[in-house]
Length: 50
Picture 1 (cartoon, one colour):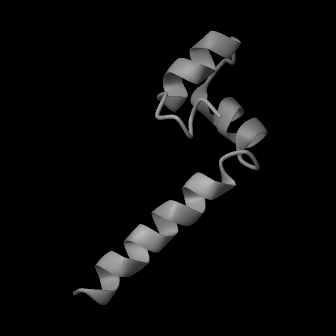
Picture 2 (cartoon, helix red, strand yellow):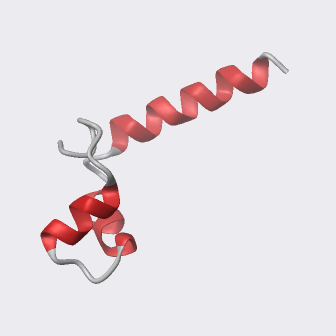
């Protein structure tokens, strides 16, 4: 939820005490699914405009 609200993943990782961003990303990937779908949609839209 923090990431979806615009909080930087690195800041979240540090707050949770993870050793690196990769750990945070792997653990919370399922939570960030909406964000990934939005990014894919935006990339797809940009490629169609090319």
